[in-house]
Length: 383
Image (cartoon, rainbow, N blue to C red; front, side, top):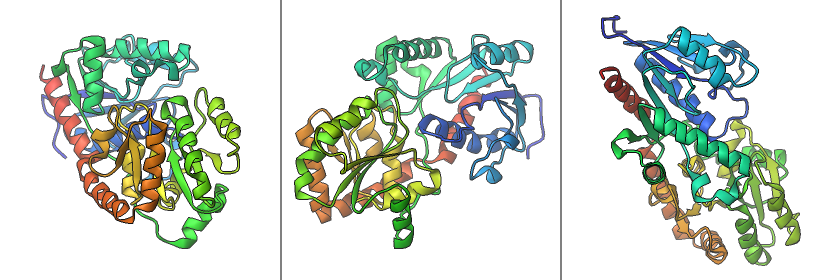
């Protein structure tokens, strides 16, 4: 460890979203990035993590491996408005030299140097896929972030371009930072493990898998309709739409009923992290034809598990998938159906996409992302 010197600083990190018992994309981003970032920062600076609850209170499979022992844990519980009231008060009383918010919004009171990640601009591209109240909140919070932050991280070039277009933010104020993917994900070939996961989630046999939050922007109604177009030709195949229930989910479930596919389209709910690799590995293909994504972690998860991938041509999806996915127009139900059929039948294409998917993963690393953030923080501290 490097000895503290005159240039040492206090770097504060909002870690409140890193300790979720049912993590999805932004929570996983916060967890893995902070985990990789703290060891780099603590060699030179004091790292202060702002938490709603202590690490000792939180149970997560990989907690024992968390290299956070060199950071200060500032546990500041508060029932409501934690960011703008409690974290703001902390910033007023004991401000760090730099505050990093990886998965939420900057507090009203903040230090002079701030770094924030903007993950998604989908509410701008497809406003009808969001409840009005949520859309207003996303608009206000994102506008606040991009206008007040010293510097912004964007998960993809597509997200940076949308921020620039929507808010007139200077391009040089935004750094594209590719996240990593869960390092424990790998193909599962053990038939016993695959069968156990199928039984756990009520999957009868072969299946196409979607994994993500059940909500309109994921384009699941069209995916169900596309599946209905091929269902008679694949009578033993099930469409599994796995993930927590999000906003406006009932019309999606109703669309399966309307097409008499209630037995063929199943919603098993949230997938435990320890089951994810086996569930993805056991699928005939992974279907992720989302209308818009700021990044799209499930793309990398499918590639890491060696499962052929179908995804969309819009937003960040081609950027993230690289050459490791079959791209289709997500607003064309016929194109989705043809893509599903192609991946089910073309063995050579399936293998090419799997091989290219493994190669594509080399572009994404939490350690590399942490190194970029650490270097950027040093630049901001020098200002």
